[in-house]
Image (cartoon, rainbow, N blue to C red; front, side, top):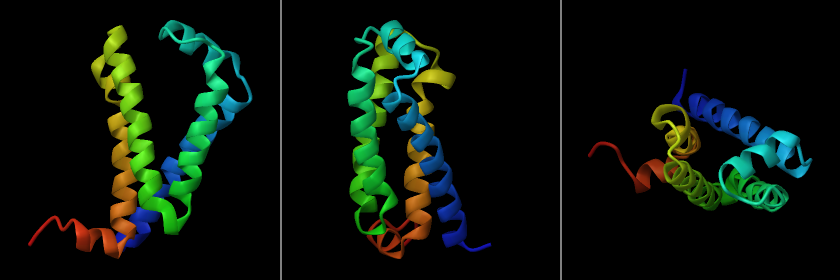
Length: 124
């Protein structure tokens, strides 16, 4: 199996997961409001966060803007990590979840992009 196929699979998994996450925020699902309230945010911010996530995800899903999308998604994940650190969430399941997502986003992009592998070679 080639690196490009694995990269596309990782990217597809990240996109499907993030699309679901975006959809429940935009739909105003009760679980989003409950979670935001538990994290100390106004439940009304769910829609705004969903719009930001949708823009980042759309940029990531398009090959020409995938790197910009990955950078912006990384920033979004960093905000989530900081929030979970602030409220004292469990390390492996909550705090590091943004890191896991980042590995899928960047790992998928790295494996499917020759230009990115040239820019950041793992070996010399």
